[in-house]
Picture 1: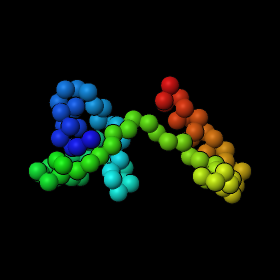
Picture 2: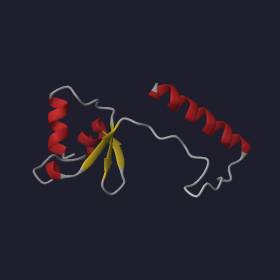
Picture 3: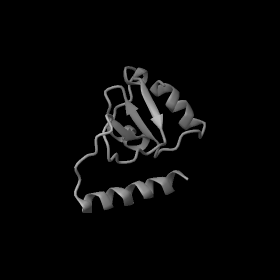
Length: 90
């Protein structure tokens, strides 16, 4: 999606300002921060972005299925955070 398309969605009330934007370089920010940090000029209106309302859980395993070595306390915190993310997404 181009930034100009995002502007149209905002103007039509179709975009939540807390929705996350993912840039082509892998950076993330929400729509509100995007407008606070970036100057809107013609060049920026053609940036490719991806709007995603989904919050990703903290993984306990990598892509190969190998378990990360977290302490028991860290695992408990990760479980709680992931539980909160599940509730937010319901």
